[in-house]
Amino acid sequence: MADRARTNRFSVPGRPECPALPRRKASQSGFALVAVIWTLGLTTLLGMAVIVGARYRTKTSSNYASVAAAEMAAESAVNLAIATALAPTPEQAVSFPLRCRLPGGERATITVEEETGKIDLNTASPAALTRFFTALAGDQSKGSRIAAQIVEFRKPKAQGTPSAGPAEARFTTVMQLDQIDGMSPLLFRTALRHVTVRSGRPELDMEAASPAMLRLLNVVPKQVAAKRGLPTGGSITIRADISASDGTRFIREALVSLEGGNGRPFAIREWRRGDIDSSSARQESAQGTGRACLRVRDAAAS
Image (cartoon, one colour):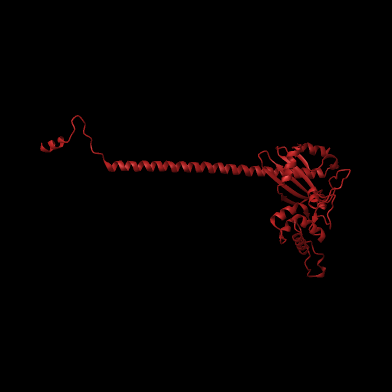
């Protein structure tokens, strides 16, 4: 009775008594809540990472598909140019550069360049090499050094036996130009469109040279009455510049011999991926898309 009296002595009349809170149990509940929040946060971050990764992979796959489609369109444009060049009278039906639309909606700019209008790395004279590389590099001494190294590079190797026959030319492709000392990557890529290994001329044919080559050498083109048509023989470089509707761009270059030999009407000697020419984009936007490529082919065949 005395203990109960002491307990009731501290109670407040009219207020219910509160049991003592279990402190340890409350702290454990708070820790569990923090753990749940962290788990939810990490799960959310992982989910976002998975979603972003899936979107990135989808976009990458789409880009690969777009590039592959543009590449196929470029090869189709090259085949179109070959068929046009082999037509009975191509110069009366189609003129190059040709701007047209492919069946897939891609815009095509097709140019044909004669190899005789380029600098032959195997047969060009030292003076022609020096003049060209000086204009390309913008440095007289550098152009002379590169020309001298090209002449040295193309010298035939000494034959072991006198009956071994004539030595073959050292340059079998223009891609070997990067083996020349002092040839920077930019200079190499710029020179590719202006050099060849298939003309066999000591000097380039100015009438067959491209406008870019004439501007580089500071040569004023002759005013001819009739426009120069496609060659009926020899070698040409076909450049197909493809622009898709989604912005994808692909350039294919093909070195084609119009006399393939062994009964073949033509032979493709090289396939190359070309660099984007900024001037071609300006010309295309200024002159428009052009007509459908298949109509051009029908006109050439008729």
